[in-house]
Image 1 (cartoon, rainbow, N blue to C red):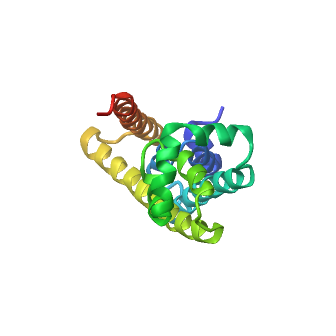
Image 2 (image 1 turned 135 degrees about the vertical axis):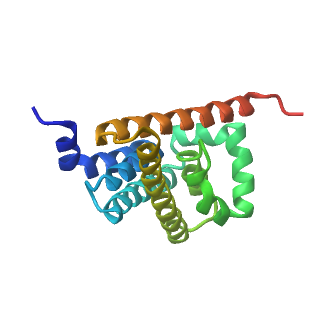
Image 3 (image 1 turned 180 degrees about the vertical axis):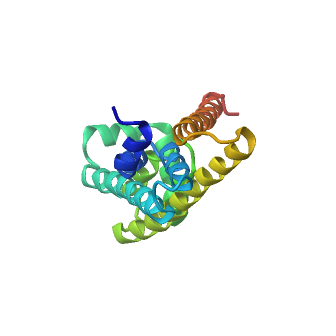
Length: 190
């Protein structure tokens, strides 16, 4: 039976890609931990995280623009939050195109709303590419920093232990932000 380290060495970049494509930050942070342990060069992990993030963002944008008259998209755009978001987006679409990746809960909503706005496809792609690159490098380096911090606090931990702890911390942090965001969203507005 192979160890987890052997599995990560063989399939780690694929796991980072799929994780960043489907989830996001946790996979990029785990990739940073793997890079800190020397499994992969940092630039490879960041490039894979960037590719997955950009592919997700651009794919959602293209699908939402292509199927803007589809019942699901029309239903989503009829929601009060989406209408409010679209009003703000039409005023300054470049701002949301650059920042949605960093706003909790906007990973799917951002490109969907932007696809309904007046921003051009090429302009969205440029903003999404820069945003995904900054996002990827930030979270991969955060993973490296977490790995170094764990080594200083807990001593020598195996790669498996660090990946599991870093993923758990990232999930707890992400879950806390999501809960906070949801609670604020559910509060009645004056």
